[in-house]
Length: 286
Image 1 (spheres, rainbow, N blue to C red):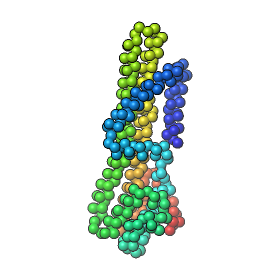
Image 2 (image 1 turned 90 degrees about the vertical axis):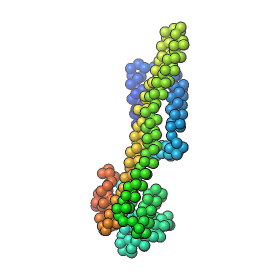
Image 3 (image 1 turned 90 degrees about the horizontal axis):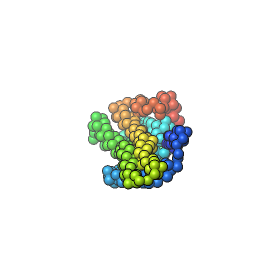
Image 4 (image 1 turned 180 degrees about the vertical axis):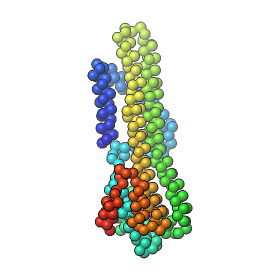
C-alpha cells in the first residue's frame, strides 16, 4: 500500500506542478504511447539481455512482495524465538537425540506445528533443521558451525539481493533510454524543418517528453522499487542471523532463556520485542 501511495504522491505532485504553471497535458498524453514504447521497450529488452534466466525469475517472484507489508514483524520474531526456546528446552531436558524426529519431519512435528508462520516458511525451516541435524550428529564444533552458518547466510543474502540489484540497474539505465527517445524525436523534427513554427514546436515538445519520461521512470518509479527490495533482503537476512546467534549460544552451554536473549539482541529495534514481552510470550506458548 505504501508503494501505491508513494507513486500517487510522486506523480501527482510532478504533474500537478506542471499543470499549475500552465502546462498542457495534451502534449504529454499525445506523445506518451510512442515514447513509452521506445523507452520501456528498449529498457526491458536490455534487461532481458543483461540478466540470466534465474535472475529474471527471481525478479518476477520478488516484485509482488514489494507491494505488500513486511512479514518480519515483532509477532513473527516472538514466534521464532519461542520455537527456538522450546527446542532448546527439549534438548536440555531429554538430550539432542530427542529432537531427531522433529528435525527429520518438521511438518509432522507437534513442536513446529505450534508455530505455523515459521513452519510454513521453507527457507527458515530448512536452515534451522539443517543445523539442528548437524548439532545432533555432533561432528562439528561451535566454531566450525558458525563458519558454515556465515557462509550460508552470505550465499542467501547474495542470492536474495539479485532481484534488487537488477531492478536498480534497470532504473539507472532508464534516463539513457529517455535520451535515445528524445534524439529520435529530434531527428524526426529535423526532417520536417519546412513546417510552420507551431508544428515544429509541437514536435520538439514531443521529443523532450522522452527525456522527461526516462528520468521520471528512473528516479520516481523503478529505482525506489529497487531500494525497497534491498531493504526486504536485509530483513530476511536478519532472521537467519537471529537463528544463528541463538543456536550458537545454546551450543556453547547457555540456558534456553539466555540463548534466546542473544537472538533477541541482534534484531532491529523496530521489531525487537522487549525482554518482558518475550518472556510473557514464551510462558504463554509453554
